[in-house]
Image (cartoon, rainbow, N blue to C red):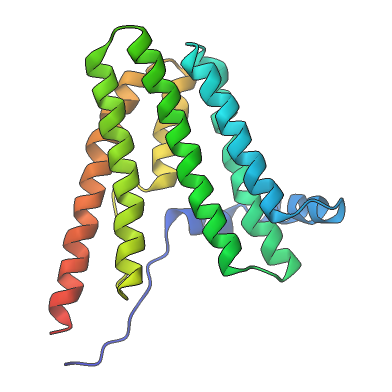
Amino acid sequence: MENTVKVERVSLTDRLRTLFKWMLDPIGTFLNRIGLTPNTMTMLGLVGNIIGAIFIAKGNMLWGGIIVLVMWPVDALDGTMARLRGEPSDFGGFVDSVTDRYSELVIFGGLLYYFLAAGEPLASMLVFLAASGSVLVSYTRARAEALGFEAKIGALTRVERYFVLAPGLVFNFPIIAMWIIAILANFTALQRIWYVRQQARKNF
């Protein structure tokens, strides 16, 4: 077996954290100073998305979308705060990842409730497919990394999904957003499966 140097890809999330470091660091420093913890910010992000999902379930896409949009930078602050404290932990990262999944699924849940109440079965199925694809994108990466592979690639990672979902809600075209996510999220999961397969073949 050939010795190769493993080069880890930089995700869009990592690039955005670097790009907006000048803004996130001062806010994170202030929040640390007033006594908030990274895990508190993580939970605030989840609660905010639940509130957004309630607006969405009631058909208020504008305010639901605005809340979802605002929660993204809130969600980014927990990692920044932990880094500034000098105490990033595996457990903190684990909690952040799990609450990210809950946040995303609760938004899909709000949309699913709205479309079911409106009697739109096709739109409801699109929400199901979008949610399934989103979960599989995360699962394929987690499973790959547990086996020692790298799987950060893909057309529609979590940040890109938010860039599709939030405007789709704010500008009231959620069905189009669901089509995009349903197709590209599942395509991304397949991309990651293929990418891991290529890595596995190179190791033998």
